Image 1: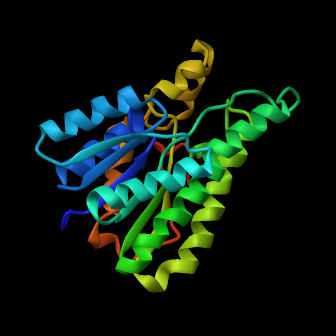
Image 2 (image 1 turned 90 degrees about the horizontal axis):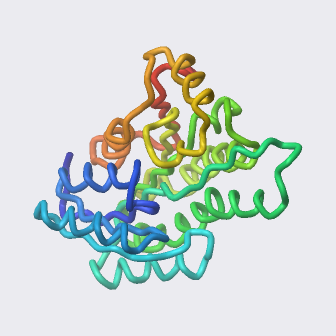
Image 3 (image 1 turned 30 degrees about the horizontal axis):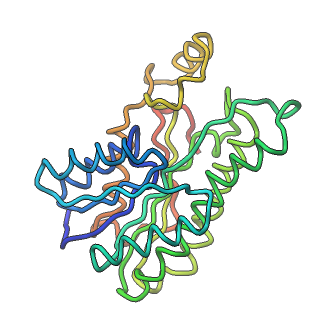
Length: 248
């Protein structure tokens, strides 16, 4: 993948899919800012990337707080002089059913998974528009495409909202050399599935045509493609990476 010292922010980049994305970027020579509410884990990931010979930085932040999102972008531009790629990966899972979910949980999930992505995108677009080049890639979910299997309505709504946000923003900035896309993973081998029961995990595996969960590296490869120059004619797209569980 082409890279002329591209600078990326990966929210929720300390572990799981976000960490895999940062590693894929490093393999392409792209510098990553690992933004996470777990600063120690973000620092560990950034150190690993630097050890591979590619620049990286760690920033602790809360994606649900707009002031933190503004600071994240400002610090990135101040440190590296530019911002080329934003990966909206930070998110939390909610399995609470519709008849039990509280207002507080609903707000927490939507603030983290959707509001954070909206304002991170808005702030990242400022330097991207000035440069005339940019990539915004949001991590949606199979749940946002199909209505979910074992997850609750807050999670489903937040991930479906990312699909709508992606298409809206893609139309707004396409003429300025900026693409906005989403990747919708199926259930993937990350910490986020630790809340699933053994029965839920078995049921999910049985429902996936390829017969297994996804790997973070498989999601990261799709993100890396969308971040590349060769994907310049793809915008407003949602790419499903789910082993055939949803074919829309």
